[in-house]
Amino acid sequence: MKWTAETKKDVVKSPMVKKVVSFALGPNGTNIAQAAGRWHEEMGISAKAEIKLCDLPESAVRENLALHEDGALGVFWTCAVFKRLNEVFFDNPGTFPFFFQYDMLLDEMQLAAISRECSKIDNPASMTIATHVSPAPLVVELVAAHARVVDASSNAEAARKCEAGEVTACITTETARLMQHLVTLHRFGSPLMVFFGGITESGLALLTLADGR
Image 1 (spheres, rainbow, N blue to C red):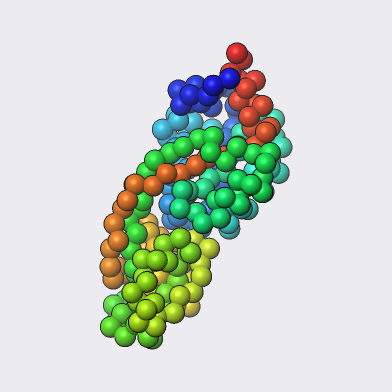
Image 2 (image 1 turned 90 degrees about the horizontal axis):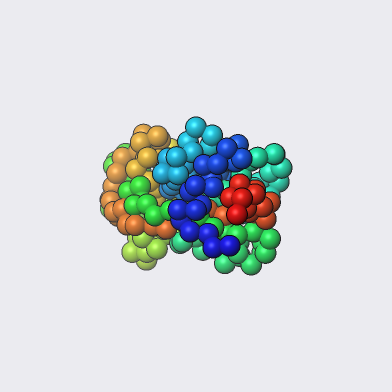
C-alpha cells in the first residue's frame, strides 16, 4: 500500500497503537529529542507517547529492535546531517529508517562556555571545544588557529562536558546551554533541518494491521 503523510497520522492515532516509544539521542536538550517531542504533538499522540533517550543514534535502532510489547510502536530518530546515516540504513535491512519525516528549525546552534573570561576565545591555541562531529565544521577557523576539538556524542553532551570543566567551550543548542548555565560566545543560527523517524518490520506490521485496508 502507499503510505501518505495523512494515512500515517491516522494510523498512528489508532487505538490499536496503544503506545509510541521514540528512541532519540540524549541527553536532554538535543535537537533530535526535541524534534521527536514536537512530532508527538503534531501527530496528536502525546498522551500515549514517550521519549527514551539513547547514547547514540545506532543505540536508538538497537533499542527499538529490542522492543517487544503488544500494541507498542517504536520509532528511532536520526537527522539528515548525521554522518553515519548511510550505515544505519545499510546495516539494518530489516528496518525503515525514513518512514516518518519531521521538519524543524534547529534549536539555535552556538559556541558557548562557562564564562567569557574562561573561554579563551582570544587565544584559540589554548581552547578546547567539545562538539559532535556533525557541527564541528562550524569552528574550522578556530581549529585552524590551533584550538583543539574534543568529541562529544551529542550537542547536549558537549554542553555537559563544558559545564563539568572538561573543555573551555562547546558547540551546543540554546536549550542545552540554558540547562548547563553556560554563556553564549557566538550564535550560528537556526537552519531548517529534516529529522527521520524509523520503524522496524514489527512496527510496520502493527501499522498495517491498524490501517485495516
